[in-house]
Structures are given as structure tokens and as C-alpha cells.
Length: 529
Image 1 (cartoon, one colour):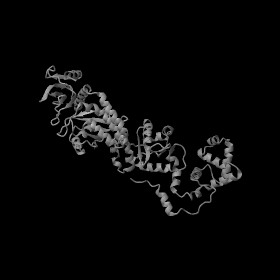
Image 2 (cartoon, helix red, strand yellow):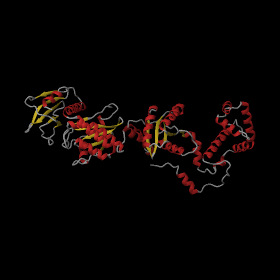
Image 3 (cartoon, rainbow, N blue to C red):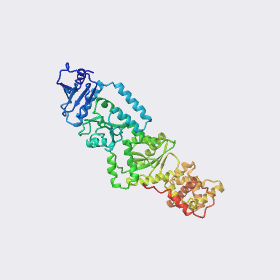
Image 4 (cartoon, rainbow, N blue to C red):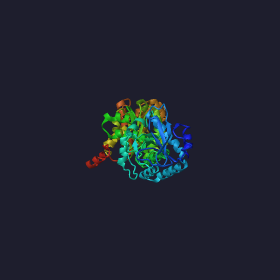
């Protein structure tokens, strides 16, 4: 493109003040790049940009012997912030690139990079990206940590690290990058201030599924910043982000936030919990439950974690879903009234149907440091054989957990209440249903009307049966303590049946061997990380 035509196009978005007659000075221009001492290519077909002041960019070209000034481009008189000036610099470079470059050719190169990245490892993808940019790159996470992974020829990792550190790029990103008040952070031109870089750098956000994970910084250590790099960097950043996540080299921002759950499960310094939550823009919960999530259809933990994050988040104030010791867990911020409400269980039941999983829900608690105890209870509940359904509340399994911890299944039958034993024998001999009647009465919290309704019998019939039970056993069914003991005995019986104990078996008279008991107890101990 001729210089005169190019300047005319620039005038559509910027004010260009010419210092030469373009009728006499009208060379062909094919590239545009920032000027930097020691990096001047002396190409007669390149338009050079020099940021001589905050508000202006000087344009020039090489006439074979020296730089020939063309004029200046005004970035804008009202620009008062560094970011605003940098945005205008990027806009200028992009406009030049779109005018001078065959965008179809660049898109073909990006498509090839993206296709190859599907199967290639990360180092290969990064090398292909740096070849396209003709410069090395640095990767910076959201916490400002520099992860230099570029292996461009003749440029080593320490050089890249030094350039980024010298220019305090990481600090600038912490102040001006991804943030709740700045959700539309896009590619930026960063003005380098050292003798290492060839003028400005390029910074573009790395994100996956709309979720920020870090930044890609192109350090101008081989060639000065040019129009082609400005056109390429954003799409290259998308490919790099996908490769980072695919190869599990960088966690997503959401997964970094979810790692707070792992912190609660492993760290004991509760005084630092609030600060670590605040660093990830999360709130340290003061009312919560821990949920163990078990896949039912063989899906991977990563898929289950993502699915539960999507399904749980809309329903609760804050949800952290993470994997810990090859298991999936969720921490749900929840008030006590909500925990005890019917809607909570209904919501979880619906979620398990969509996610094809079982949820083991801990007791409600208010101290984050109790997450370790909730983790232990969830795991022990998951090993029980006494629950049914896809949503299991640990508090409903309290007796079974206690019985399981006794860990002497052989002697537990001895503690079945003798009244229940007597009724079992009576029913077997007389073909009656006194055990079922007593069970129904206790489950209905000793409410005569509700028991009669549940058992489909007349209330007088129920009264006669209960009187008969009292005559056989000598138990006063109006006494709360007696009813509690009988209800506990029913729970014990169900626990034994679930663990394959037959009530007709002969009761053992000896404990397990001590060494076996110690081995059994060890499997229930919480591993400390």
C-alpha cells in the first residue's frame, strides 16, 4: 500500500499532522513497527512508529540513507491515564495491520496452530506460537507469578524473566488486569522501560470458557512490536490458554478459588483462612456443609467437578467444588434453617439426577476448621451399607456410624433389646405382626393416630396390640426413655442385617484378635496431610 493511501486511512480514526509532501514522498509500505535503537531493520517498505511523547507518535520511513519523517499521529488530547494511551497505541497498530496485512493468511496460520494444539504437548504449541510472533513470551498467572516457558532460539528463560521483572509487568497486571471492576480487560500495549526490550510489549489475557486464568506477555527481545504481532496475539492467547488447561499446566481461576477447600482440609493455621479466602475474592463461610460427591456412571472426577460447579452455584450463596485425594467434594455456604428445610434436600436430589452422582452431606457446622471433621464423617458414612438413595445426610446415619466405630460386629447382636428378641420369637410362633406394629409406633414418634393411619388399622386395634406388647415384654410404651431404647434396638438390628448378620445365628462369645482389631480401626483414621 502506498504511504499516501495509508495515511488517508489513518486520518479516518486519528489526526495526522504531515511534515512532508506525500506527492513527492510516497513509498510502498508493507509493515509497521515501533522504532528502537539497535533494532532498526532499515527496510524501505516499513513504516516506523516512535512514541516521542505521551500524546503523539512520530511516523517515518527509511529512504535508503536515513529515516525520513512523515508526520505525527495525535493519540488524543484528553488521554489522562496510562491505560488510555496504551489503548490508543494498540488501536493505531491494529488499524495499520488491518490495512497492510492479508488477514486471511494470518487466520490460516492461527487455524493451523489451533488444530495442532489439540494433540500436541504444551511446549510444542508454545514454540509454534513464538515462531508466529517472532518473539519469546512469558506466562503470568492471576497472582502475578511469572511462569516463563518459552524456548525461543537464542533467548533463554532468564532473559525473558529479567525483561518482565525489570518492567514490573506483574505488578502492573495486579493493579490493572482482571478485576471485578474491569471485566473487559483486553490486549494491551505495555511501554517497556529498559535496555533489554525493543520498545513496547504486548499483553493479552488468557481465559477458558470465559474464565480468566492469567496473561500472555510477548517480550520484544528479538524484533520490535509490529502490526502483525498485534493482530495475532489475542487469538494466539486463546490457543495457549486451551493448551495450558488441556495439559494441566495452569489451573483456571475458578479452580484456584476451589483450592481453598483443599486448604481447609490440609492446613491447621485457621488464623490465615480469612486472608487466603480474600485473596481469591471469596468469603470465608461461617455456616456450611461439606458434601462428598460420588459418581454413579463412571464419569471422571474432572467432569463431575465441572458439572456440580455448574449445577450447585445458582442455588447457594457460595460453592467450592474440588478434588482431594482422588475424590470430589463440595463446600456449600448454607444457613442452619436452610439446611433443615425441605427445599435443600429437594434441590440436592434434583442435582444428583442431572449429575448422575450420590451426595453424602455432613452435619451443619459454623467453624471452617471443622471441615476436617466433616471430611472424616462423610468418608465413614460413605463406607456404610445402611443407607439408600442418592442424597445421604450423615446425621441420619449417626447410630450406624457409632455402631460401625465399635468395630465388633460379632458382639453387637448381644445388645439387641431383649424385648425385641421376645417379640421376634412371639411373632414367629404365633404368626402375628407385633414387631412391625412396635416399629411403626416408634417411627411415628409414639403418635397413636399417625401410627394407625400408617399401618391401616383402627386406633382401638392399635391400642390392643400395644397393650399386648407391654404384657409380653413388661415395657411401658408411654415412657420416653423406654421408647428411645427400643428405637435404638431397631436401628441396631437394621445395621446388623445390612452387614449380613442373621438374627438366628449363634451369638459369639469372643472378641476379634487384637491385631485384626487394630488393623480395622486404622482404616477409619483420617490421614493427615
